[in-house]
Amino acid sequence: VFPNPSAGVFDLILAGYSGSGPEVRVFDSKGSLVADSQMELSDFGHKCRLDLSHLSSGIYSAVVSHGSKTVYQKLVLAR
Image (cartoon, rainbow, N blue to C red; front, side, top):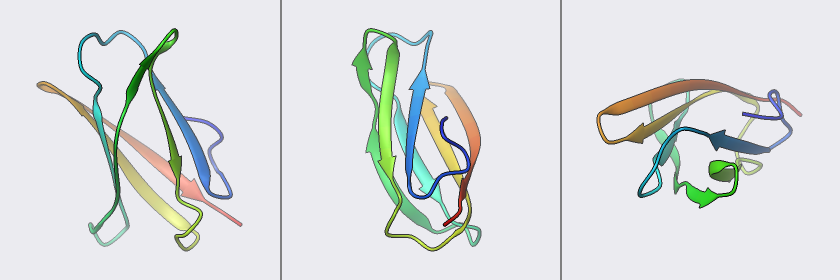
């Protein structure tokens, strides 16, 4: 994930996965779903650009799911 912290736009790249794109869900500190996206296959692996600029500054959790695998990443939104 980069940049992290960000003013609103995060790029996620996930290497080592094949097949359909992993799903990305972003949750706020209360556990509410605030964004949902599907990663696309690129030359570098799966990628996704998350635009969270409409959200308030704070710490969010990105959950990337692909089959039985799940990856968690903290996102810091700072303006």
